[in-house]
Image (tube, rainbow, N blue to C red; front, top):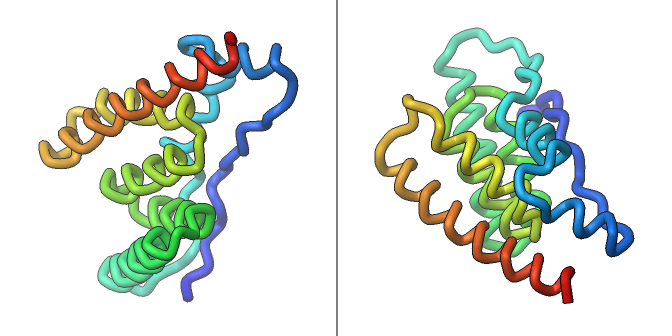
Length: 151
């Protein structure tokens, strides 16, 4: 198992109704800062003998993330994808990481991350399509959560 320095992932805290309303405002600076931390983590501090070894470690972490996701262990999957993304900054790893955030109910953070990911010109077309669909899903979920908070 590869041990990586965890990126600076700040959990979205839950609290009062007023805090919840602030969390669901459009373009909340707090959410945007969190999205920046997800998109731009500190690189892993591991030393690898070659890029091939680093890629192998990355793929092992991605496979572990997929297995955890399939088992419904979204927090563990999120951690594996975060470690993989910190090793090699691949958009596919980032997309999987953000998908776990959405599954865990962090819809506003996921929405901000998808928006930032879609701003990249280097994202492959297939991943751009997936991110666009997931952005729509995050926006729908965020709207539903806003309506509950405002009720």
